Length: 420
Image (cartoon, rainbow, N blue to C red; front, side):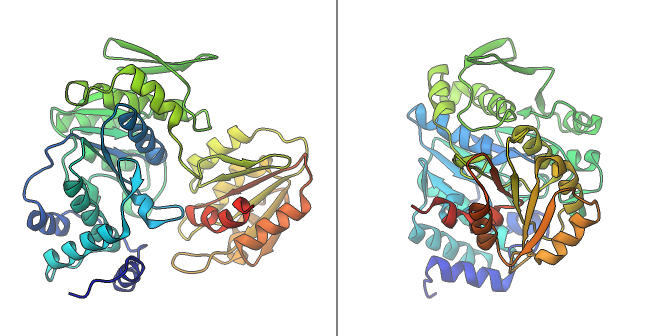
C-alpha cells in the first residue's frame, strides 16, 4: 500500500465517507478491532460521554494525570485547529506519520468492511494508544454512547457529564431517550460518574439494569464553590481543590466528575490530591468560553446546542456597551432556540455562512433567527472571517464580541483573532 500524507489520508476518508455521515453500531468496529487487537487494554480506561462538557473533562483528566508524573493517551473529537489534537500522547499531539501508520493498519485490517470516517479514525486512535503503552486511556465519545465506536472498549470508569437535547435524529427526541443511549458506556460492577443533577429517571433505571456502580451528582457526588476553593465530596471522601482554570461556572461540575473518576482508580493510578490541584490549575482547552482580548472583550465559544447556549448566556451577563454576536451554525442545529436563549445577550448579530459539509448559508441561518425574531440588529456576512473583521472595526473598547455556534465557526475566526 502506498503511504499517504495525513492530509491526503483524511481527504480520502472524506471522499469515501464524509465526516458528517453517521451510522451508529458496533458490529463493524468490533470486527475490525478484533483483527487489530484481540484483547482489551491492560491500562485503565476512562470513557467520557455527555451532551456538553466531554472535552473539558478529558482535558482536566489529562492534566491531572500528567501532574502525577504519569503518561495519558487522550482521544477526543472534533479538533479545533489541527487534526493531531484528537490523539494526544503524554499531552502532545500524536506525530502525523504515526497517525498515518495507524490509519494504514486499520485499512489493512478492515478488508471489505465499510467504515465511516469516525470509525476509521477511532480505530486508528486505539492502534496508537496500544503502541504508546500509556498509564491510562482517556476516550471521548463522539455521539451518544451505547453505539459509538469508542464503546468498543469496555470502560473501567465511565463518565456522563450532562444530558440535554442534541443529535435527536440519532439519539431520540427526548432527554430520556438520550439518557438511555449515554448510559450505554457504563459496565457491570464498574463505576460510572454522573454529572447531570436533573437527570431523567430512565438513566438510573438503565444503570441499574446494567449493574453499574453509579456515583451520581446530588447523591453520591456533591460539589460547591467557595471564594477560594472547590469542595468535592463523594463516597465518604472530601477534597478541597482550586477552581479549574477553564472559565465558566459549569466547569466546577466537570472538575468534580474528573476528580471522582481518578479517585475511584486511586489503587491503580495513585493520582493524589496534590496532582489534582496542579492539574486543575494547568488544564486548558481552546475555544471553551475563552477570552482572547480585552477592550473590546473578545470571546470564542464552540457552543452549538441549546444547553450550551443557555450556559453561555449566563456567563456573558450584561455588557456596558454594544454586544456583537459573530454566529454561524451547521445543519441540523436548533438555530431558533439558540437565538431565543441568547437574544438578550446581543445588540448586533453578524450572521455568517460556512461552506462545505453540513454548512449553511448566512441567509438560511438569518431566516431562522428572523422567525423568533431576535431583537438585535441582524446582518448577513459572506464568511466568518469577514464577520469578525466587521465586528472588530465597529466595536469600541467598552463593547463585546462573541464568536460562537460550532467548532468550525471558532476555527475560521481563530487566525484573525490571534494574529499579532
